[in-house]
Image (cartoon, rainbow, N blue to C red; front, top):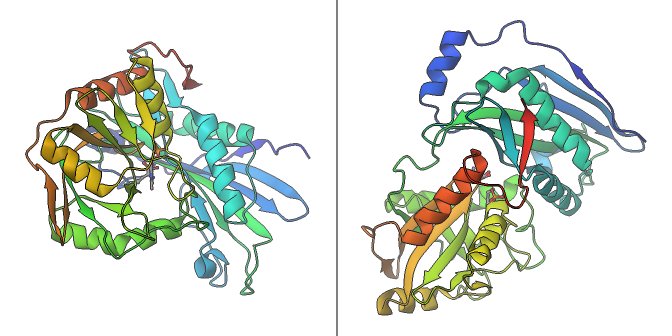
Length: 364
Ligand code: PLP
Ligand code: COI
């Protein structure tokens, strides 16, 4: 079956230019949405039957819709960057499309073809391109594609009707402290994902499962939470919404390997490549929290950072837990952390050569 072509219905009530410009001056992550959204419908035995761009607005949903009861929901996060010449680009969209397919498989939702995913971004930018901020102060348009089980039926089985939607929100830095190192709360006794579970899928339930520990962390002055392996609470997995890296004094860089319980971060993968490009040794392996503690104490570990589409690259100062604190909350951002952040954002904003063909033009 061929993919449906997009039908476009423009909003009769878009935000006035002055209001939009005021929002773009200092956008707050996720607080304002653009004028339009994408809606594609899938039905069992028919496949993807429609694809539309429509005015942004509430979703009419029956209270028995499957997603409201059994959490069959997946999502992506990807950004649109304006370059100096006004053109709009995104970063590795085929990789986000593939990860959405992986998540769909795990959560028994239909897989959206890669071309339809990329076309949905292009279509949204075609009508809402003016919502992509000027390339200053790390401003971008954060795009949130998501898929939900949209069948009205209370039986427990995978839904026979699903919707793929795309919304977008202009954003500034996720952490408002800029390059100031963040404090992270260790989620002891509170697992996010186990072997064979849904940790590798980008599904809402994983985030719901992280919030209790995140609230504990907020109370301790931490802005994110770190999960350890749930069986032994020994090895580092990832943060609630980011992957992590550790830089050693001898130049080695270590990040937890993809063991099926953590998200295959696209920023993580890109940084692994950029680190190898620099001739540094990159180890994807298990790393114990005790190794990090010992490494920080002995001076073996000299930098730690978190990464993700929303967070870009953010230095980590310390890990806090009910068993004590590790690291230094006032640590200066590390040299490699700052330099990788400069390189990656430079590629994304078109000021550093895109050696790996990661950028994809959405609009001239
Ligand atoms: N880990 C989790 C749990 C996330 O939510 C994210 C963000 O999407 C990441 C890691 C980083 O992934 P990416 O770099 O693809 O945004
Ligand atoms: C992203 O980086 O896209 C995420 O989904 C993570 C979340 C902290 C917003």
